[in-house]
Image 1 (tube, one colour):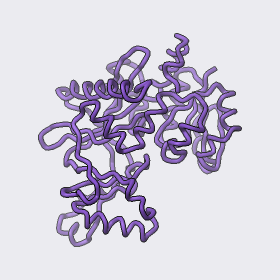
Image 2 (cartoon, rainbow, N blue to C red; image 1 turned 135 degrees about the vertical axis):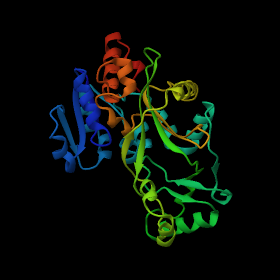
Image 3 (cartoon, helix red, strand yellow; image 1 turned 90 degrees about the horizontal axis):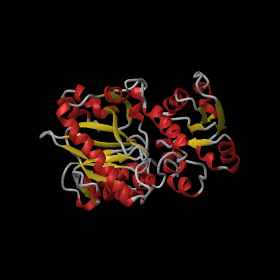
Length: 343
């Protein structure tokens, strides 16, 4: 029997619960320090214990995964802790989705290229010396907003980076990998999509926004005290909040997802498979401006283990993103076309 496997982090519980709901086996590759957490949940059938997630590339672990007929579901931790190079070159187990598009997610400039190819509205990006407006500086990797900061000039950028280097938070010269993007004031919105290469259907399964440490708590501090305390906002994601969009905006949400799928099909064969997320803001004029995409399941889907308003209208039964992935695996098995959903 096919086994759904994933790293013990991010959205592992949702993915493995979804596997059991669809009648598949479940397997978790977890750090030994987290074993006691996952032992609390009866829907996890098998465990592979490691000291570090990067051990997944060891031949003996890959052999265990293959022996269990495992399909590995990628999420943000696979990128941030194992690394895209090792995923591409050294990980030789079947992966759900297009593992090649994870490179485009990890590279800020490839990401920008794909979003432009999709014809999406875009925010301007800058080199450090070009900064002439409010910008957000993003550090590389899928680390949940860790280390992001706001600047409005090159001098300000240099001062913050030098401070990060002096504290050992970043290495000298690593600022070349920072991505500097125009900051758009508005409501952050994250569209959770699923695209099936089998049925050719695009589904909007949920919408959320994120709660980011001091950035979202800033409004509780009177402005005079903000200035006096010299507090800088931070953007580490600590949780997600469900959101239902005005119905008049839904048509554009589907159009955005469809444009992205079409562009991915052309630029990154075999294209978009399964879950992805388009992230952006609705600005003061009510325009949606994308600033990111995630080409795999995102943690905001954990809100909807029993389904969202949108998945309920499509399925009329509890349908998490994790369960939707396992349903696609079952559909591919039934039609004997697993090659369409795996890389």
